[in-house]
Image (cartoon, rainbow, N blue to C red; front, side, top):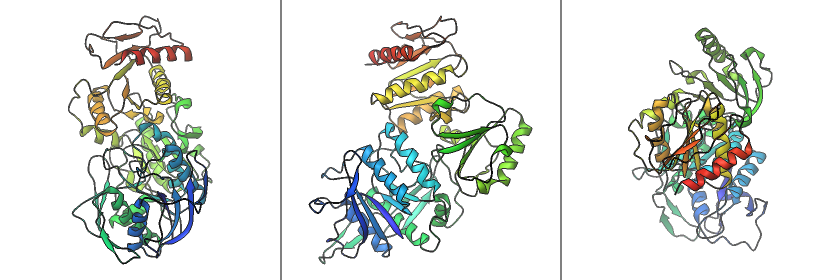
Length: 479
């Protein structure tokens, strides 16, 4: 069974028993070529990871993608995504990464390729960051994210259902013997815990046909029971059809995934082609919803993944055979963990007020500008189905403080943009340098209001120039 190892390379002189299929170098611009004979490996991070995997899975064969060169083990998102795309196209069954990114803006590119890898039943094992709560791809839905537990030894690992999703803890203490006869014990680090799980995955997959199990199914085998998947976000969605019985208006230009079709009923989908995910948006008619869930259950074996747009009265994730399932219930679970109000001053907050979907459109366009300029930006919204646009969804406006606390703890962004619906601006309540209110009004009465009482009218039919002007005012305002 082949494993792609994305790291700083492998020095086979340290562990001569390692089986290498091919070794590649990923350039700074993302180009991939065979590792040159003159390229020296000056660090041992990847070599140690491979040694741990081979200790518990000696039949493993490695494809090596070297993205690190210096002693600081730094690489760009371009290099990481390029290596992942190579794994996608090469269809390597297992991809190991004792690395990752904590830069929020890297989410958009990393998530897309990871979702497509999961769709073709590739298994991705990734170490969580040792410094920050959020890292990619370890925190993406369907990826086996691993943390170290100093109480575990050798090839031990455990599953834990903390917070809103599962976490896999594994041993990072491994006694390794080099080809020179010396031995050493690896330190407690997430980097050296991830190889423990990669070896376990390899041992499981060796008994099955290649690409016959989804990542959630493998997780159930690892846990030795049916493990209820609890995903924070529907990251696994990529090529999807939308079933919209209530004909809810959708801003398709801002969807975080690729929409390949929209239908009013599930029966309208061409079931002969199961190479898609399904997004079912709950209508206001309870009868339609009950019928929709029943039909989803009957056809669960032909979909890649399911996003149920609504809250289910009970857990239906068990019926979905692939295991890739998400509903709004996950949002309620997250916010219960952060019920305390957030103090002022964590990070700048831009509140967007207005009617209908216009504030959501403005939020997406503002976010694009912030991301383009390198600001780490998160959107928070209670607008129905706003998770379709890559936003942090809150069930009601009353959940805003809990959502801000969650975003601060998990992402620590440069700023957040919040949906406030039709509520009017009250600058005297937000008289703080960390808040600014933007009001979109059909009568052009309201504009951007902050504690200094500066205003900037945003017309009803605002265009790109209006949004750019607003963006510039926000950047100038915050210290």
